[in-house]
Image (cartoon, rainbow, N blue to C red):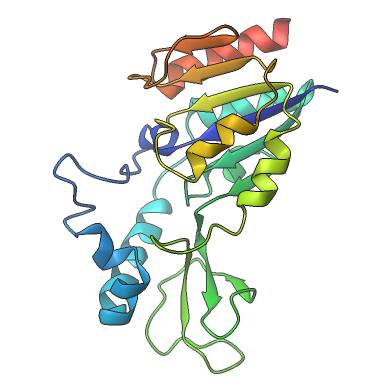
Length: 226
């Protein structure tokens, strides 16, 4: 069975109503990124950071997977599909995808400051005083600026085995996620789906300048009929 690797970014979830990473003015929900997505921000004002992610978590409960998410699930009828996402939402899982790697963490999980491998499911608000079994404060299970990306090596290994690569809703300009593209075998066909694709044409690359809910069903239909 051929292996399809799918790389997804904020663009696929934006159509479900989840705000993209940064607004046009460089702020994220009115906050400087470093205030709410860095170890320094957490150290300076953990209450602000927790409130920020509590609001993101609350919003996540109000949205649903869109046609792009659900279309990808149908590929599993004919291919081995691995999704590597930069998103911290659970929309791929809710749509029914069976293999999803989150490069930047997961909004519906928290982890211990004492033991970073102690990760808990968490669907409600996280507050100061919520401790792990080691009596250590829990923090969002999010990869912040300046932190290592623990799932990167696994994602690289999967990308190296891709027979087909699909890139959706991401500029592939932000590292280390952007580096995954170079690990795909040279002969691997690539589909790039984004309204404003920031990639140069080359042999084996199919560019669809479409939003995810339009472009993904088109690619899925082509692959399922081939």
